[in-house]
Length: 128
Image 1: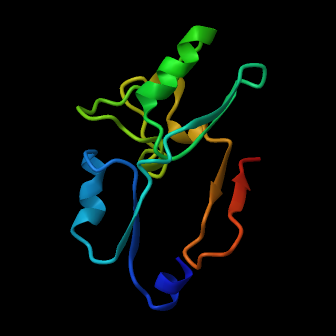
Image 2 (image 1 turned 45 degrees about the vertical axis):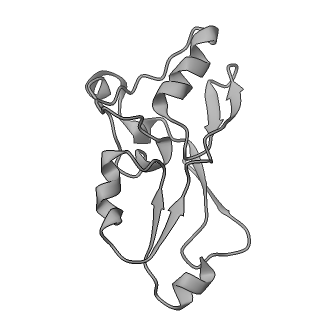
Image 3 (image 1 turned 90 degrees about the horizontal axis):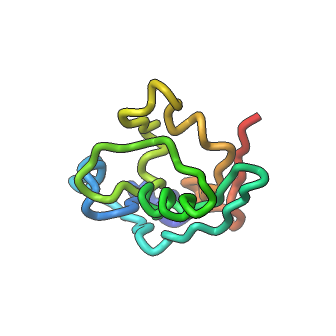
């Protein structure tokens, strides 16, 4: 990331190749950071009502993981293909239930990201 930043090479992340949002970066030149294998749900904290996920986690997988606990993820996206979390939060996706339950930004409490200049440590952002 740092080398690409220093040489002004465009960088794009991609959570799933078959998601319609890929069209934004597929035609551009530069590096594509493929996040498909970062598809794990790292923690489900029922007491805190929070989950920790990687950017490649699909909404349907999150929904299935929460079902045994009697919870659901209220965002329903109307896409034919699996929609990855990492490509939906930047667009603030909401789906058909967005008016009732809110949109993606209402559910993101924090992010751990790597900035374009590629620092050695990831940066954490939390919502106050």
